Length: 256
Image (cartoon, rainbow, N blue to C red; front, side, top):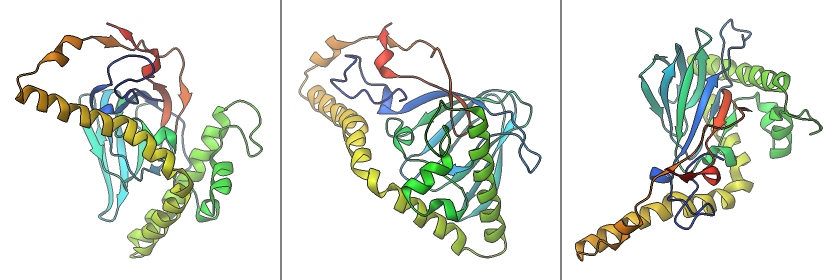
């Protein structure tokens, strides 16, 4: 979970993170890939925009959309964001690429809104897909491993490379086929996504509307609840899609 799921009345008793977004620290994988680059797993989000705030190192963001393939340079101080449907891959050119990631919708991608560009055979249904991208091996046993993270990354790059090849050869149906497969995978998860959206971004937006209405009436009572909160730097990282991920959990928040 990333910071942002704390809507009004959240379990931690803390004010919601601004905009009910998710925020994580990311060290992009320095591991070499079969195409001679270094970096993470290409994937897409179906409902969430994502923002990179580059804080260290140098790299590139490779993207594939209906407008074609593009590369955006990533250097410290750059801010790059992209909307749902953007297949994206973080490339770590100097081995030190570090990014603060801001995610729409309370970190919804960690609840499933992310589909890796694995070859079509692995997109047939949700169990097949989950086996292909599991960090604990096909049988689901054992702890997450860097070897599995590398394996799923390489599988996603294989699919991404073929998608890009077909699209650049004029086969625009390739991208639509991937979108359709990703949409089918999302189906069983949509009720849970909606619940997270309603308790996070929707609730926070509604609260802002209530505050505006109160101010119109000259009622400033909500200002008496002013508070400062903080989340300590996470103690551990996880094996994310793009790199080593440090997710900021609102349940660990404390007063200033």
